[in-house]
Image (cartoon, rainbow, N blue to C red; front, side):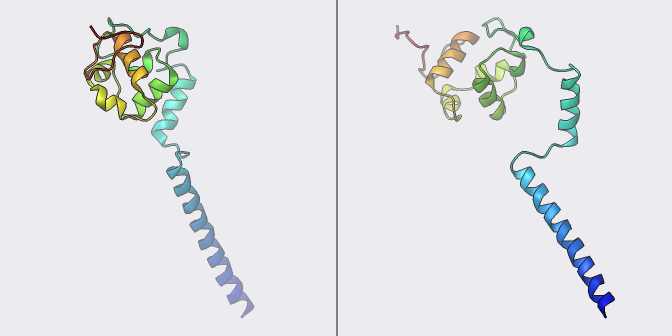
Length: 137
């Protein structure tokens, strides 16, 4: 009788432990703390120096940059780079093609940031946002 009760308790505690582990993993996934195998490989590559440019290797944002230049390779302010990446923009060309109205809809990207992007990437505003301090002609 006691052995049966202990066996049931053992299985129930094991089941509860599994449920707790699943809940913790789900929480980590929801909060972005879960790392996929692909991300782990990318982290390892970057730790070895592959696939990542150092700050000295970053390109200055200029009108001469080719459209296929990756955003992560350009010396943008960290906030701007993070906003553009979070929005799914990967290349300078995609930024140049995106309307100001769309850029303004991104959280943490205001008219000043957009004007700066337009000025440094050499593209006039598509919706009337102009570089700071410049008056319309």
